[in-house]
Image (tube, rainbow, N blue to C red; front, side, top):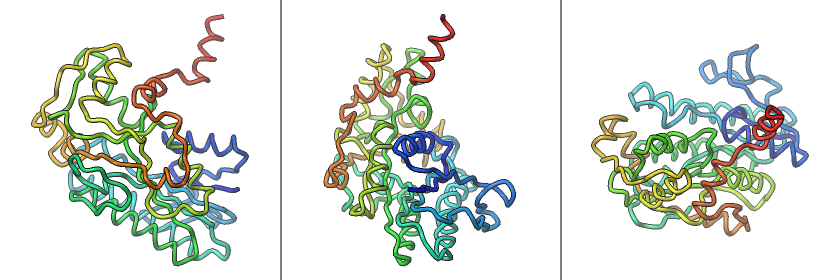
Length: 309
């Protein structure tokens, strides 16, 4: 299978590309940039003629980072454009092809559910409130347009991805390194997480299982409260986990919207559809997943061994 992937150099894209090649698939890495430097450019509305030609699948992972900057009006516009406008551009390009990819997978997020409190939510839950929920709604709607082209569309809603190489975990772990780790806000808010290995495994399943379509929660089956998560992280890092960070401090540091929706919102998400598809989690338990996340990369460990000889 020839799989075109945007965002192929990011945390998820790199791991997925490696897994696809190991499974015998061919990967076409789509680069964002003007004509002559990339395959597609959102600003100009340009897509290279050969970007999607012959592709059996398109996996769209590219998008500006949600958690690395204050949500100013300009930043919000960038978050919207990098997801919604880019998805619209690629779907429009697919419509012009004589032979279209059989499946379109566009990254989404559990931010769709907003702050759900203690309520368990699955793919049938209604839209929540807030900026992220609206962004995810519109993002998924753009992807669904490809269904009118006869393309199977899947919207994997990612939880917090556990990897030491990127995403939220390195930022969360930083205070623990200095002995200042602990819960954020009340500590009672639910966190739905997933090991990077399971996220990649789930995407591989969604790619090949033709019964998979629509929203699919990519989260482990055991969400944890923020306090329990902090305690588990402290144990894995051999650091204390009793220094709470009050909500008002987070709002001052990060901005109210970003703090409330990313760190203080409660999302107790169930991977109902993934279970129905028969996916078996490699790391269903939090502490095991954290140990796996912090384990040395095989290549790095091999290099260190060679250097020591």
